[in-house]
Amino acid sequence: KQEVTQIPAALSVPEGENLVLNCSFTDSAIYNLQWFRQDPGKGLTSLLLIQSSQREQTSGRLNASLDKSSGRSTLYIAASQPGDSATYLCAVSSLSSNTGKLIFGQGTTLQVKP
Amino acid sequence: DTEVTQTPKHLVMGMTNKKSLKCEQHMGHRAMYWYKQKAKKPPELMFVYSYEKLSINESVPSRFSPECPNSSLLNLHLHALQPEDSALYLCASSLLLAAAFNEQFFGPGTRLTVL
Image (cartoon, rainbow over all chains, first blue to last red; front, side):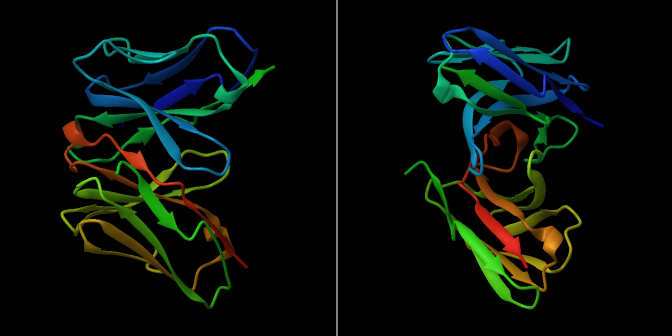
């Protein structure tokens, strides 16, 4: 059974710092991994999707990497800003289930202090 | 149009009420999803529709009744809910149900409070 873990659960950094959020999964047989951002009480915003054949994806100040063999993905945020404060969720789509079901991690809540 | 819309934004209902949540997308996506999210938890999948047919029901109580009247619209009918059903209800869509095409796009959610 696929399990997704995100550590730490919460992170507080000063503005301008580069930071890394971690996501690990137990079954390396995945189709893809998606990173989302969620502001309090709001829906999820898709940030990046990495296909299983890819090693990384970039969008602006965000870079997501995927290492299937070790069951890990990281989301790198460069030059963090207070507006980056939110909860970040990773979710995997497993080969064992050829459906749209995503397995989510518990999320990392990020606070960027001015 | 690259967004998923949900109405209403907020809903307060009594345990004997009947209400409906609505979700709409115009991205040509053929898979649509309902999720329930409690505070400080990740979303939990409830239902999945593919080509307007129910594909997955994650053992959701019958007081939640989904409906997909066409490829752009997804409803969730609510009846005789319990206070513990209070949560943020999220709708999502993807191009197809198959995992290779299931990048999901979420709506803003409906905040439901059951009194």
